[in-house]
Image 1 (spheres, rainbow, N blue to C red):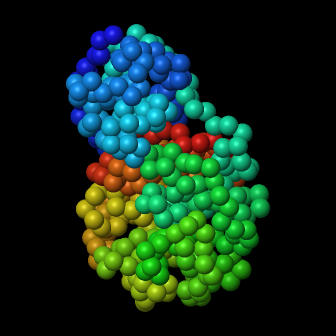
Image 2 (image 1 turned 90 degrees about the horizontal axis):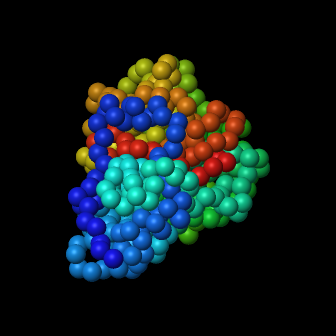
Image 3 (image 1 turned 30 degrees about the horizontal axis):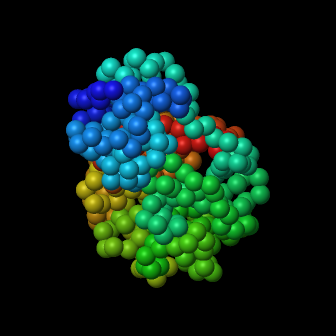
Length: 386
């Protein structure tokens, strides 16, 4: 059977303008999807159903990815070339292409197979998939398992157990593992390498008295004994980690409850913090603060949502504990809660993830892939019941 060549798949990368991102943020419909049976039809048309095919024509695997498209949509997290990945892995990457470009990414075989009319999840969650409890909260992104891939840590609302959901480096999460109980006595969780040992730690505040503790990560999905990092942290909120002064050490940004002043608490690389630096006023009109390099300039920025209308803003960091003028990253973000950042799809850009549900209820978790240009590509579902 002949193998079809596709200009849309050749070197494709989804980069959206701020206006496009705003429109996408308003949408509550997940990106396009298709069942395994429909993908089998596409593969049959493309490659005779041979998922390991490499004819030397520059297109690989059952769905005939070019190398550049495979890389652009995170495929190299699975294998260097599509034909070296499993059928499921090829379909997962194809789902991303479908969500951005539609069925015409396969101009002949996509429409012929009904790719744009299916909308089924090819690999729906099973009863044993995460999270398994009545909703999660206090999300933190980072590499907690030491494999170089970003994971997700979250606390179960029902009993305070902390879980790690290992990332696969391609925008999906694996089965969760418990990291310990009793975390319902803490809040304002945020991640970073606060003790300088190369492992991602968690900073968390005691609800009872505002003491801040650092829980040093061991790089294997659990923590060593906590370190007291200071008292009096109950007068601040919206804690988020990042290297805001560009000294190579993890800091914490936090907003005062009284007047909304933003302070940077410079980390000393030993699990404690130096004298805070005022980074600006008026931050009390913002919420859901999360740190990350959203514009790919190597400096830590802050993404924050306007309370008034749900617009998401990126505050570009200048590497000196203050921020440049904010950039709008889209509207409609007031439908999300527990917004956090991490490079979950392994493309080198910081993504944003959040749960579409009111506070106190569970809902779907969505990943908004970062473009590295202060905007985000089409979101897709990471899981349900969060």
